[in-house]
Amino acid sequence: MEKLYEGKAKIVYPGPETGTFRVFYKDDATAFNGQKKAQIGGKGVVNNKVSSELFRYLESHGIPTHFIRELSEREMLVKQVEIVPLEVIVRNRTAGTFSKRYGVEEGIVLKYPLVEFSLKNDALGDPLIYDDAALGLELVNGAELARIKELALRINTLLKEFFAERNLELIDFKLEFGRALTPGPSPKGERGKILLADEISPDTMRLWEFGTGKKMDKDRFRRDLGGVEEAYQEVLRRVIGGTA
Ligand code: CDP
Image (spheres, rainbow, N blue to C red):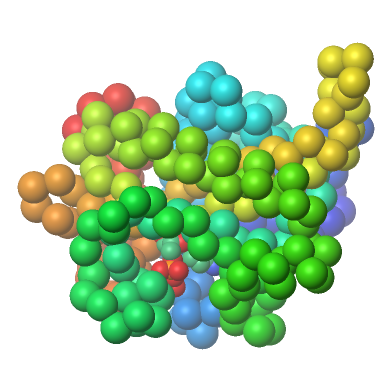
């Protein structure tokens, strides 16, 4: 089947129905804007299953997403969207790039959850972008930006609770949103509606185990902490199993 797009961790193919895409999750892992590359055995399966479960959970709590259904261990069917070229990061504790940028240690609880935007542009290293620049460059309009922030904070509340039940603390995560391209079932249709897109997986979140503080996410790969495959499998087990 002809690829529409191949990224660092996923391949997008045309879907079986019009207005759909088939997304295949690879084991390839990259970090530091593609400078570090390797394979994490079984990662594609974990990320497809974890993302599918989280999309179902979020949908059941009123968050509109691009997810339609799982097609196989490594593939999901999604609605076609036009991706908003912003990486939307939500932070509950300081970590990673945020700690480096502001010279603060990792793990400080933020007074309230922060929503941060980067421009999706690998060549530029996904630079931080402020609201006025995103609006001035017409990457989003004002209503879309407000909606994206509102959804990002609701998703944070829902995911924090979901992972706390599994003894994992949600430190930060990245979301991408898209505009629906196909008319929906409602008379008005859903063209242009903002949908949660991309994936939510241990590649795109930081999860620390309550009590031990053990990192259960891609930082094990970024920082050569070992036990990468095991951590991904453990996250999957807890996500599916519903407990720690
Ligand atoms: O992860 P890194 O230190 O490079 O950047 P960050 O801004 O501290 O990342 C915040 C959260 O977003 C982490 O959970 C990252 O895994 C995730 N992220 C991502 O999934 N993709 C990116 N391009 C950047 C961040």
